Image (cartoon, rainbow, N blue to C red):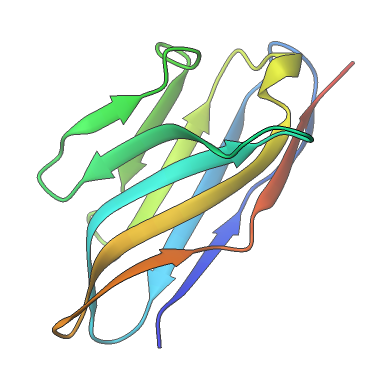
Length: 120
């Protein structure tokens, strides 16, 4: 069974930084794409940053140049989101998503979310 677990959210002042972590566990799971999404109150869930197994990244325009998605080459199916120069509008629940194969069965898995609040 595949589980996706995020960590690293919290309260930070504008201009500050946070680093989110995400691990997709499951002995037979191989992620093809992992990404971060966020959802603010009353809004839809939007893509923030996505990383493919081939190393291709894609960022939302609103976070380009401030956020960086990366993977841990020593830990399977693990990605990070480094968030710098945070703004109040970055406040949201951040969700990690993993798309891949659990042995031979394709799947799309979500974490439970971690709250990021940017406020003075």
